[in-house]
Image (cartoon, rainbow, N blue to C red; front, side, top):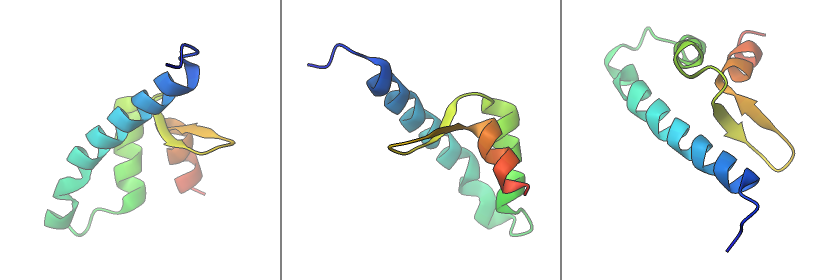
Length: 71
């Protein structure tokens, strides 16, 4: 059992955030005019600092992901 909690808690929050994001983006196919950057902006407004993407060396919040998608 891992009692460190930090990484496991981040991974759990990221998983939950992605599940919420998938639920929110499911209607995307019903409105093909919506672009991925627009969806990411909507998610950033809703989830802000919640983890959106995790890798071995980096964790991006929804807001950070939105900033990168606007480049």
